[in-house]
Amino acid sequence: MTLSYDPPKVAISSKTRPSFESLKRGAPLSLAQPIRLAGTDCLIKPQVPLASLTSFRVGGPAQWYAAPKHFAELQASFEWAQANALPLTLLGAGSNLLISDRGLPGLVISTRRLRQYQFDAESGQVTVGAGDPLPRLAWLAAERGWQGMEWAVGIPGTVGGAVVMNAGAHGGCTADVLVNAHVLLPDGTTQILTPQDLCYRYRTSALQGKNWLVTQATFQLQPGFDPVALTNLTSQHLNQRRTTQPYHLPSCGSVFRNPNEQHKAGWLIEQAGLKGYKIGGAQIAERHANFILNCGNALASDIFRLIDHVQQQVEQHWSLHLEPEVKVLGDFQALGT
Image (cartoon, rainbow, N blue to C red; front, side, top):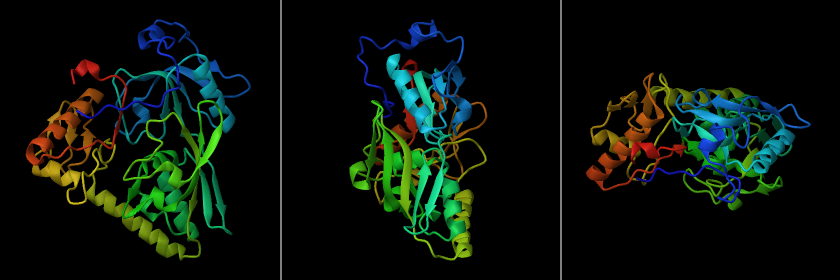
């Protein structure tokens, strides 16, 4: 099954990279106490639970975890991971992730505290931090009468995640409005990438699978519109999502990409008779079949198995392969898949 995803990693020789088990035993780093990065207020914390930081509300702990607030802290976190030969995983809002029950080895860097808003009325451009919530940007733009982000109001992710995934809804997407994105490379240098550099396609970009971290993005919007009208349109988009999609239980949003323009993933899953199907505490939503819900006691392994089952059933019924939109992180090998 095509569910593997390699999280961004620092380029380290396999001969020098410590195993997850050796890290748990305390070598080469002690897991007893948090570590403050020199010259910053940023803490590297051991064994931080990740379930509460994802919209699925499942998953094990991060071996090490950092949530930098400034670019200097972000750079220092990268350097710390490199100095200690640790794999690196980048975590935004956690709205499009399925993390293994075993957790993640190495350092997990959360971008949710990297926030800023800069509206330039002369150019109509807004520069936003990678950790800023996409719905918040949609509301702020609408309230100013700046057209172009109304589609984003119901997407439960960050700006950084939207740049990487080419997030979209209601006929709009990131590629339509992005001017450029600043990214941090593992060697501590930065690059400014345009949409052309990012090679945008449907829900994907050249950044996926790379150990490059989006730090901020600039969008081209259109000022001068009626704020009331834009706010009403933004509200309509949000209400449409809430009435057609299940938001009463934890989920990651749409699990699968649409295989083509003629076939929607949700319709294919529904026609295969899978609405309401459960494995453990995970269930295909009755309201929208492209949603998997955590009914309160799901494990990541339950959701993983349910994704696999849906893929098998749709392929049997329609000879179409559903590619997951959700990113699967960590070790699921014990499941025998």
